[in-house]
Length: 148
Image 1 (spheres, rainbow, N blue to C red):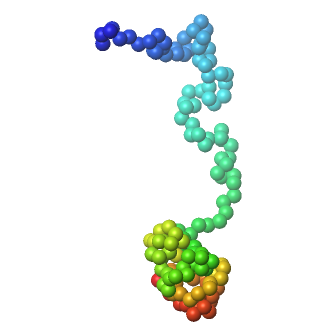
Image 2: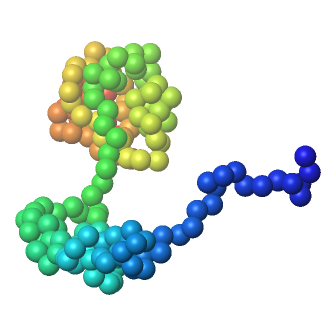
Image 3: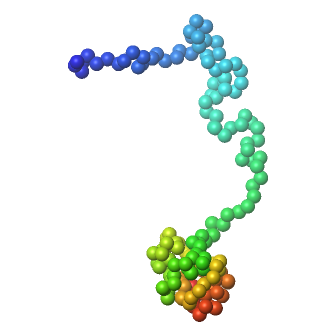
């Protein structure tokens, strides 16, 4: 076989539908668009996908509620029970140590310590924020809560 002898397989190319060329063609009359309605008219292909035929759109019918502040701080949460589980041999616990121990994922995001659980030893905890209960429990055990 030579390159010059290569042919397309049968059925690889088909003639385009010739719409509106008489009843004998199979695509005469309404030209494959059905009968009447907005989609049967010219220009119907330019409707946006969210268009509802002039009915009040759903994004305008539904109530708008709530507010999201663009200045909201998103903290990584660490509970006292997590610190109690992994930090027994430490005397100081900061974001870098928390990341090494697997308590947080990212050292660049702020960390908040919450007071869920008990603490069985004294240590100095450094974080960006503390709940009132967490600060109380840490200081009751003889440790310190340092705000970064």
